[in-house]
Length: 132
Image (tube, rainbow, N blue to C red; front, side, top):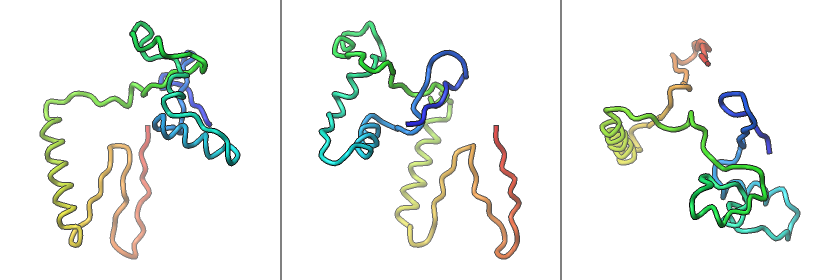
């Protein structure tokens, strides 16, 4: 597994760059193991990490065998916005509309960091990618 430094680039906190969830993490490790290797359950693997809240009652079940903590990067959290409910409802309606009329339309969803270059057929498209 590749690991990358924390989003603030200081300290000893690291995060896994490829595993999206605990189930995905176990599946990736299982692919690397030889055939007929016993694979532990997802819950057993989860309990081998450090607890998210050490003072909680649930943290008594954690073993801390892996000196890792499973968490989401702070910069991935969604920020509150006054129109977030309206935008989520509008997006849901638009998606349902695109599914209902899938033979007649296409639905492309992008975030603010990526784009799809479009242009006239047969003419070059400017590759003006912007990054941070």
